[in-house]
Length: 195
Length: 376
Image 1: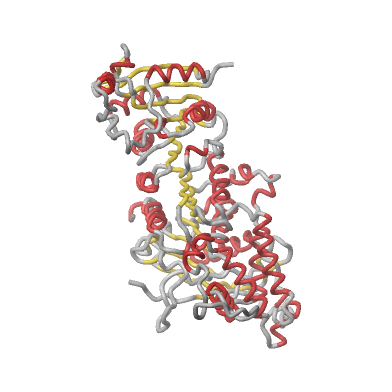
Image 2 (image 1 turned 45 degrees about the vertical axis):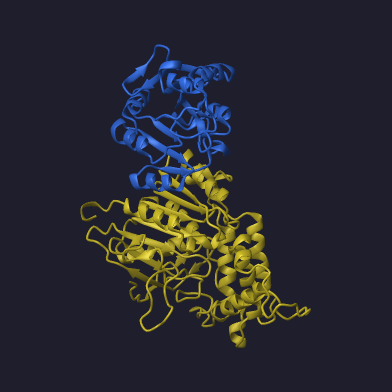
């Protein structure tokens, strides 16, 4: 996985955390956090090949369709719940964000920022963007939810998610100034609303 | 390349106390082993069998065609559970009819065949008897215990009864207890047997008969529930047994599915013991580790310390994925190491015995990760 993204996640995950990684892919991130950051936990995946890859790396994986929700996991039962580039594949994106902060004391959500300037130019030219971060054509994309950094801020406000940190990521590092236009990846650190 | 298996037997003089009261004494276990126990004695894998299987898990018998073990696709040299690395033990459970002490044997106290007097045995009793076999083989701790269906229940029970003796538990197409529908199927099967006039209250041996009608019906019913609607339709559909047109007969075989089920029933009634069928379905019904914890599975599984692999199959309606998820949920709540795969296979409950590459690769990957120390 992208090292800038991995480092950014590692900085946000407290050492030794119990982690639930939603849409964990081949388990590389969890394997890294287990080996280098004292973490434990589980990945959740729907794809058979990814489930196998996780088992091969020694990452605990639970095969589950996230569209069915997180009923299997108890309230605040994980230190951190990760949704790394998973949000854009979910039908119930808003529910899953609420579930993320129900199950985890901390939620870390990343997704491709549709308002990154090359995407804006592409749309201004009349075409849907095709970039490294969004490599698909409009007709074959698995991304059923496309959103911008600013969209997410609005949703977080509506959903009463507590945003503990928000920034963008580019290949050369963290983007804190105008991330809505200047970053390909949006990163949010969330918690449940404090009552 | 397959290999030849050799069944062995071991007699136990020490009485086996049973959960339902009473003891089994003396008794004998029939078992097979494959591969070599290593010097550290830490590479043993116990395979637990389901309703109609036996200790003959893998390999074949010399000079007997088509005598491969029931999990020969899973276990053997170079197979997912690789006997070049692991020492695998298959054991026939007491009450069964493939060599270990069962209802067709003589009760040493009365000198008569047990028949209906064979004591009711439970999953927990089987696990205790298997533990004694391990004691005899000099195995303190299993690298893994594994099984499908009722075998999976034994694997789960191992992790609760002897947590310190199990490093990994592989529970496939199983459940933490039977639901009402499952018990209902078992009851229909049992009634088919016990109402067969040749059953004689379970003492048919003395009459020189076998309640084959009951066994056939029990097997036909069971077989339907082990398949899926899809796979039956694909395999048989509405195809007729003979010719193109109906015979318009109420008793002759019309459809191929009828012929298939009758064949399965006939075959089964030739080798399976009627009392064993009652005993084993009862063991299924009784298994419920959460019952001692007011139905709280999470509390029940808190006793386990093993790492777990659970697998279910999407079209298995007898041991549905939801039942496996209950176990996963309870293990996660206890912060246990667990991986769970839900294989999208069309074959229903029987899928756990079949060659699905996703399933076999997953089990292979899991066993490849089991650490055996310096020699691994």
